[in-house]
Length: 238
Figure (tube, rainbow, N blue to C red):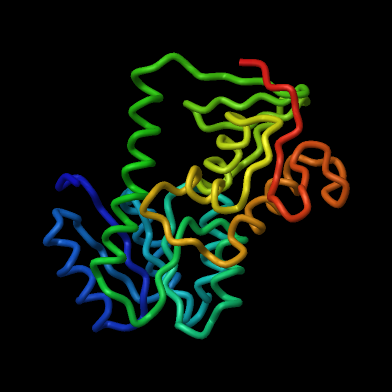
């Protein structure tokens, strides 16, 4: 990482804010820490950040609502912090478009490792956008530009995707008509350093179906292969 990396920490626990800010500084990551949603919005209005570390238990607007708000207007990477027993919150956070989560109490080294992975993917994508020709693929009237990271409907409407949704769809696009297990999808979409999240692949597939399928309950593209995994059943033209 370089000294240009700036992260916004949103947590009402001052001790955690200070701990993270000091720890990230050791990795040349500048951290701006705030205590609630109002301060988060103000900070984002004043400067750009490379990622957000977002606690779910916040005064005023809760973290899940803030995650939804962020994902509706930006593709900035989001890592959520959540209590050990709050599995439902972790699931909802992923559904709302968070890229990763860390469970409290956490090892700062784990959070930094996850942050490095997310920022590396984001920056690699931006670098490809400026140095390579667009990599545009088509399937059944849809278009996916893997450099600009856009999915476009047959009616030429851009469909917003979270980083995790885009990575998973890219995996399917690269491997049409192949049955892929959840482990294979997880490895390909998140990389070798990923930790398998309970139900996260199923959640991502469900979210993609809502955006791709005319009838998500009877999918045309993303088909479930019982006992094996999923298959992307479309003719891909590169």
